[in-house]
Amino acid sequence: MSPAAADAVAEHLRPDDGVLADPEGCYDSVVEIDLSRLAPHINGPHSPDRARPVSELGAEAAAEGWPMEISAALVGSCTNSSYEDITRAASIVSGAVAKGLKVRAPLLVTPGSEQIRATITRDGLLGVFEEAGATVLANACGPCIGQWSRSDVAEGDVNVIVNSYNRNFPKRNDGLASTLAFVTSPEVVVALALAGRVDFDPLTDTLTNDAGEEVRLLEPVGTELPPDGFDPGEAGFTAPPAEAERAAIEVRISPTSRRLQELQPFAAWDGRDYENLPVLVKAAGKCTTDHISAAGPWLRYRGHLENISGNLFAGAVNAFGGAVGEGKDQTDGQVRPYPEIAERYHAAGWSWVAVGDANYGEGSSREHAAMEPRFRGCVAVIVRSFARIHETNLKKQGVLALTFADPADYDRIGEDDRIAIRGLADLAPGEPVRVEVSHRVGSTYAFDTTHTMWADQIDWFRELSALNVIRTRL
Image (cartoon, rainbow, N blue to C red; front, side, top):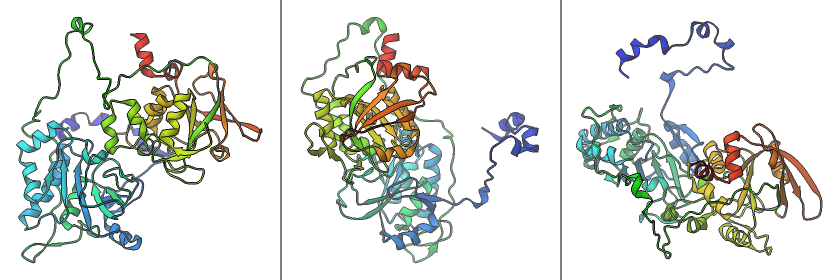
């Protein structure tokens, strides 16, 4: 929006007079942000929650024993490669090249879409990065979701990467638990790539160019929209046939395909309460969508639900002993990987529950993290709290997404317990759901859980997926 356009509707873009006169009477809390005091931040490793100003990272790295050298710097992802993002990052790189600098850590640039790739190529921005020594990758998810085959390091080589991607959980980018991944803005990524080290503050520090001169990086300058408009690039859309022709089309999938599988509708709820459900997994601590459904090479099976289910809970930490990706198989008492246990329960026709800790399902909106449990027989996930998108994805697959009314009840669930979920015929918005737990020793107890389903989402449960509801209505 231009300043003139904003001025024309200024009366609609300001608080009411009553709010200005008495903000405490209108809001529970008033937060004041002094923009002049904000500083660039960088988050990590292993979590987007661990944040500090960029200026403090060097001291923290020294205290923690993290490497100072950056093994790779990556700009892009669907979220952080807008035209403005790229122009701001390119302005830093262009200014650095003019002052005799080049990147000192490998810089990988991933355009977030074909339109962005074509536009920044036309406008000469990709050439700016390449002149500084960067490598331009295909406009695809790439290292953001583990599609990165690294040859410079191996598992066990502790190394630091900085990126402007969405997530930085262990193994997220390159499949290596020993990679320490930090997330920050595209501008800070390129600044750190030019320095090659994490103990560099682009706001105050200088770099030495090839001539031995101490130079400062320029402040980033961006352009929100391309002056010549967007270049759509190569067309990637194929229009569907006319409606009258669709009925005659047969979709054939090779029976030997390992990457494509026809998706069969999940069976509707039978109207009865759930009884005698084993606990397949009780996850301790952070259990993200990457822990539930790992990315990387598994994404080749996105079109084959059974094959991709081979990664189910492979990264989950077992609350009973702390092992990663394995637990007790209730069919015979043996310890097995979670994907194998889920497959055995599925083959036996067993339904089951998963139990999780706080912020369960944090991470990307990976729908397979909900589809895989449902496919293998999960009927409920009971947690201390959910990440919002994953909770919705579970509901869309007809899985009961339940939250402990008392978070302490998480601690009471044992490895060999059996779960019953009562009153499902009366499931209603805002009403608690009763859960009963039977211990192997014979004692039982019950507790309440809450849910966030409204009426339409309760229909998803009854039909056991939103797709089933849509199919019925159409």
